[in-house]
Image (cartoon, rainbow, N blue to C red; front, side, top):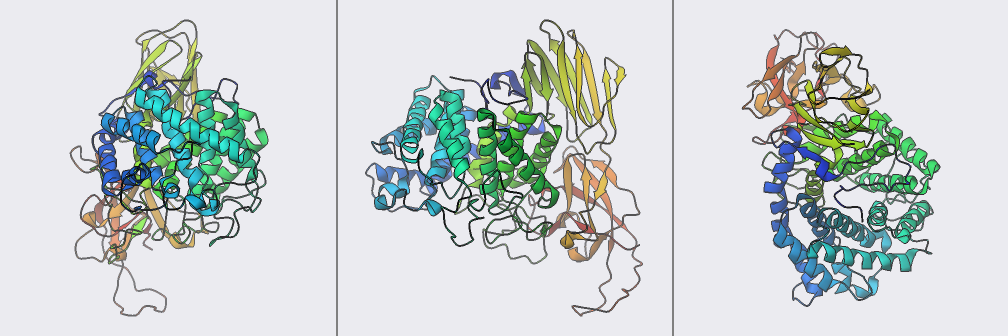
Length: 625
């Protein structure tokens, strides 16, 4: 059994350019941004999720299966939130009482044949496996399997971990018996990647074969039309034949993460190429500047190419997490730096913005603009983060990602170490240990010190993001050429050797492609990997928020406030657009603009909505003079 690893560990024979580090080879400093998020997750988010499972009836639903009274509460896939929280608890090594109680409950609730789904075990037994387009039965099973993987890799000797793994295997064996020769698939992909990882933990080949079977079965229309058509279910085209991402975003990215897992374990390079082609499709015309995806609330879906309205952005938190997972698998498979660049963009923007600074409030969707007077009374489009949702898929998903965040910072093998996400911490590979000191992404400098050395030459690889046009690298004070991609430093290292990488972070204005009609004539303010926004609390008083324009002729400035909401903010020049007409439409030319610019702060997008409710925007209209 492969223990002491994170959520994704390709086998030795997999088509994989990079190898994840064991979790005990990585230690993130709690004072760093990533380490701080992970510590906040343990202290606040995870206990909050456990409490909500009780408050909203998720655990009570499972207890009903064991004989407790009461009616089913919540959505029919409510079990999945239990499994995601359980996975987070295993990765975090905390919430021991919850882990033991949940493991015992799952074992007791499981049917003799391995079936486990509380919605279909009491009131709807006659409907088991009969409404796969709708039921999420295998989706829930997949999250159970991922909790079991976390149990096996983080607490292999613990009785509760063994219980969860046994429960998961009995359910997985049932899926193999029932679906190995069936054309059926689940309406919500997720089980594919979970089955591959369960195979990687156990070595049981039928789990991998079933995952490959499910991926191959997509695109044959077995799920029917449903309300939104087969694209919604990812059942409109075979994965290898699809030319562009489409349909329900979370379903799409979960399916493609699983497709990459299947591809690398089976050596199916055509399937891997398809996943890369669809990745390129998403980034070319269907991804927000924050990394978020999904522009349609109606079906939680991708829109048309360049359909990226900021105020109507759905950009679901789970979609960002799924895209991050897809990118990680592509990075492991190919070693290409663009996938790490996108992981960074997602993490600091599309994902980080989903959780409040308190760790117990969350966004389900992540708009890039909130208008003055927005009605945020409904949870589908609130003005601020909420403590929970009726469909609570996002909070425990965020908890499990943050609990395993250390698994994604670096890769390594006996020949070297590759640093992908810069954060203060300690990393070990191939007998070498390095200490990383940095306040990235607030500061530009990353210092790597060799603290332990193994035998022979060894390669340290540092990522220079594509956004950085001026990177400066020295080794023991000697200048080394550093261009976008990975800089690979191979030598016989000595204890005390020091590498310093400076990623110059000049503030810059970013405009969208001209076909993105919704933000034509507007610009976003970005520094390093972090997208900034203008929030009402920083806007000049007495001027309607929507009448503010960015003066692109004046310079952007960096402001530091160590004790503020953001340690680093940008100071941007704004003008007030004249509004001397009461009419909705007016003839051109517009009246002359004479207002002088006012310098205000723009905060990192991921920190918006941590003050009182009010308007916000990422793309700010550009003034004409």
